Length: 169
Image (tube, rainbow, N blue to C red):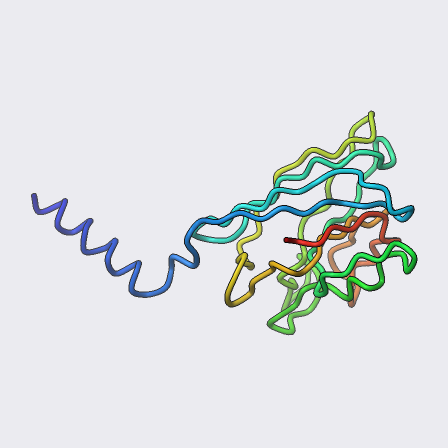
């Protein structure tokens, strides 16, 4: 009985301190390539400590590493090579990169490997964002770059051209 009471008290405390950042929820995003063709999608699921992003994207360069980021603007105009997506989502004005002091941006995520068929299937967890509210990414975009992020070059990791983009609905 004492253990149950302590556990219940701890759960109430967690709820009151805001450690539970969001209540469930899901979003989707449909990727287009630079020719404007639909090449896959992402499913985004809100969890108590961030967002789980599941990728299913085809038509990428086989057996290659690509970088994957959340960008600040929800515009994916292929005629601009997706420059309309803006820079990396960075609500705290952090430095870019997983390897730098003072980083990373909230939109910085690990490089992803594309298999031999040109398909990228992956699940990425980002603890620095939410779907809504503070650090909310609904209405932003997901961008796949044609090269690897070096996790340190400012402002965007020398990640190569933007080859796919999806607006988070």
